[in-house]
Image (cartoon, rainbow, N blue to C red; front, side):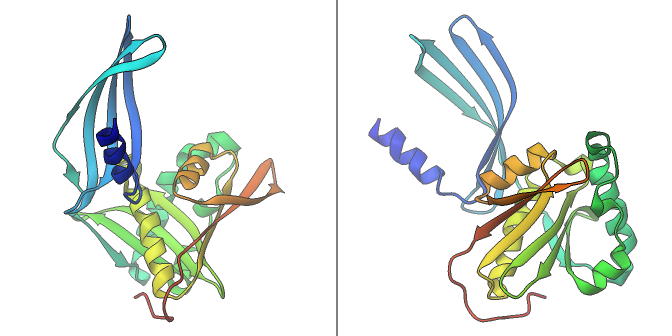
Length: 233
């Protein structure tokens, strides 16, 4: 038990650790879970498939078996700052990423409607590429005492692969490079899975404000003390 406890304590110190349950089968007193685990491996962050089998006795797990697949590393992904000619591609990716929320809130979310020609000029917009394919974007605004995450969007074909979490970690690096002690963001309360993700990443809810048919949730995450102001480009 001491060895298992120490192993888990070490694992849970990894940044951006996340487990997604893909499928569960329960037969008699056996439970079989198929999971996708996001980890910060020593050589590079990535995902790994895990099969977990639990034997349950008197309402508790009495035995457990685990089989892990080969890690799928993120090293093929690269980030770069958007330039003026990227505005159209950023707009298209963002509209595709947010399309699923139109039926939830009954309108196009704000990121689908803004002027990205202007945003590329005035904000930090970083692009995540998988090979030659732009897979995700993050838009950030440097304020006096915090970095505001204005938008995180992942192309549907690349969702649930950890790229959103990677961009959120990237935002922390940008904030540190700017000497900013805090990250902030806001989102629609109806975007429940987004809110849950931000909470898992260490953000807490500061306040809720009514907005149209729902509420806007304002969240923040403090960073450790950082150094002097630098240009993140």
